[in-house]
Structure formats: C-alpha cells, structure tokens
Length: 133
Length: 389
Image 1 (cartoon, each protein chain N blue to C red):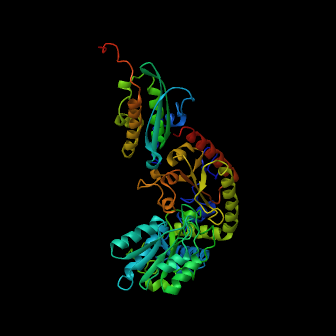
Image 2 (cartoon, each protein chain N blue to C red):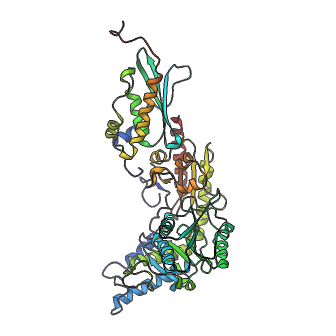
Image 3 (spheres, each protein chain N blue to C red):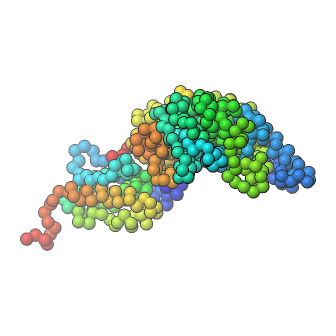
C-alpha cells in the first residue's frame, strides 16, 4: 500500500523500468498477457525467440510499483530460457525477493499468468535433442 | 519550497493537513512552558487557571468570528471527525424517540458516513443522496428527501476529494422549511471560502489543521436554537457546557484561535492566490492528452484540483512523483482496498478513479511548487504510459 516504502531492489527496478515497451513492428515475437485495468493490474510480455530459447524479452504493464518492478526484473531474467523452464521461480518467491505485501500477492499471480500465456502461445518446435523418436 | 527546504518534495497535500503557520506556533508556545499560560482552564482557584481560561475564551471568540457565530456556540473537540460524530450521534440518540430519519450524501467524508452507518444499524433510516457528475447535491434533491420524521441532514460544504462546493444556504433553507436540522462539515471550506453560516446551519464541524493550525483541535458550531436537540457522546467533567467533557488543551485552542484570526484576515487573499495557482496547474496538465478533471473547474474550491490520467495507475504515479507530495484515489490509498468511493459515486470508472491525483494548495504553496508539479507529472505520466499495454 502507499506509504509502505519499496525495498531498495523494488525501488531500483521501478525507477529504471528496464525492458519496458514492445519490439519494433516486424520483429517476430511471442506475446502473452493477463489481467485488466479495471482490477488494477494488466501485464503483457513479448519474447523474441532464437531457436528454442528467448533471445530478448520486453514487458508492458499497468499496475502498482511492485507489479512494474517485478515485471521489469522478470523481463531481464527471461533471456536464454526455454519454453519448458520459462518462468523463473514463483510469485511467492518474487514477493519475498521484492518485499511485496501479502495483500498484493494476487497481482503477482497476474504476472505469472501472463508468462503462462506466453508458454501457451509459444509455437511448437522440433523436440529437444535426445527426445527424437 | 513551502518553508521546508529545497530538498523536500513540493507539498501539495494541504487537504490532508497543512503546515502550522509560524505565527500560530508562537501563540501555542505561549501556553506550554513554565512562564506561559499552562494552567488548567477549568481551575478556578488560582491565577494559572484564570490565565489559561482567558486564553481559551479569547481563542473561542476568534473561532466563532470565522463562522459568524457567537462564542457560546463553539464547542471545542479533538477535530472535525469528533465534531461530526458529536453532531450526528449526539443529535440522533437524543431524539431517537421522536424522529428516526436522517439524510446525507454518498460523497460525504467518512467522518459523516460512518456514524450514519452506525445509526442505520441502530434502527435509524438514512436516505443516501447521489451527487451529479460535478459532485453537487441539488437542494431540490435534499428537499425531496425530507420527511415529517426527518431529524438531521448532513451535507458538507466542500468535498475533500474533488473540491465540489455545495449550496449550503439553499440546503439550509430547505431544511428549515421542513423543520429538519442541518449539519455541515466545513473542514475544507473554512479559511478558503465564505463560511458565515450561522443561522443557515444548526451544526458545523471544522478543524484547525486544515488552516495552518495544529492537529488535534477542532470545533463544533452548535446554534443556540439547536442546543436542546443535541446531547453529549463523551462524559466526564462537563466541560464545553456539558457537550464535550475533557480537559481543554489550552495551547491547541490558542493555536486554533490564532489560525482562525489569520484565516479571517488573510483567507480571501490566500484563496484568490490559490485560485490562480490552481488554474495554472490545470492549464499545464490539460495540455497532455487523456487528462480529465474530477473537480468543478469554474466554481470548485480554489484549493483542490483532482485529475484523472487515462492509462496510468495512481499508486505508481504517486510513487514516481518523488518531487511532489500529493494523494491519489488509487485503491492502495484506502483502507478498503477499493478506489476512491467519491470518484466512483460521481460515475468515474474504476480505471479513472485508480488513475487520479488530488493536488491541494495552501497558504504556503508557491508558483514554483506548481511549476515543479506540472513538469514532474508530465514526465511521470509519459513514462508510465510508455510501458502501458
């Protein structure tokens, strides 16, 4: 809630909002989103893929400072991740890392849902080596 | 700089509270230490008490003069919240065997809404009036709500979130014609708008800390003719003509009196200056797209400008605005976790209520503060919209 100071990590990410925005038109990317403005949180991730992994991620978000900070951090963490291990950690772990109040945990679930939507929209590719029949 | 030093944010949250005027602080200091009027004003057996009582009565006269009342019609309380509770609960419970209908508006301050809800649970009937999109309560709507058993109407003079100003004189006339009592919360009006309502209202709440006085002291105006209709809700000592027991805080009251005297002497000029600054701030903000006023721009309070920014969440906006101190209608600013009930009652969407800021001005607000605010808001809104989905 307002008045509860952001932790230094949350403040740093909120102030920088690194990886914010979307890719230029024409750049192929997988996008997933969740939430809506009327519930106070809406998050969208864009993943530019290189082969079977994320080359670069961007985020767009409407929400409180904690939501923006966590989404910004996550966008930076996604590079190099594959579809089957896209989400780094869990909302509870993000909450602990960023000092997110318990009352806001539901907002982090919206972020997780946006990443799950990315996974759902990730185009099927050839199976990983060793799993080919 | 608000007298607070260049490194601190520009203070634009004067509807929440104001800085104590140094002249007020000086008057308070005269009542605190061993050389001052520190006695108990109720002590009638020695000079210390007499001196304190004289300070209290001098202050009472200043407070009364600000609202056009007689000194005997002023009851000191801990603030406007207590004053409103005394007016509403004290009147209702004293007359529960005669009249059990009350009228108020959904856009009132919680200090009115919560005692009204309490009385509903005690079996009173409450009519909840709706405001128009500008936050005004039509006097005709009040008139239509009145019933033969209506005891009390409570309508604030200036809305604390939007600055909408009610026609208290017309509402008072409607109440008098129907034989109902009228209480008005003047907390955001005194010192900024004419508040000479004696004769038009029966009860009026106001507080020192909104007019550069100290926190912890306020008053309820009780019109002489309305005195038989109200009973105390606090007991023990019988101070304030039996309506509000408790040792009178001489220093707080002296500060309140000085603040009222300053408001009477300087309030008109302060308000004119604030109106100019408010207009300048709106001109600056309204150059951006997607900026919607929640305050009546033409005839609202000169001290309050409430604005919604499309596509921006209020808590993030406030947090990004490190250079200015303002409040937001975002859910995170409320204990209920819901966005501003006032803005929602005026028909604003949840998103617009979430993305609102209230800028409120005071005696010490400068043109530099307003320029800083406008520039800071533009930067923050542009940045947050830049990452919005």
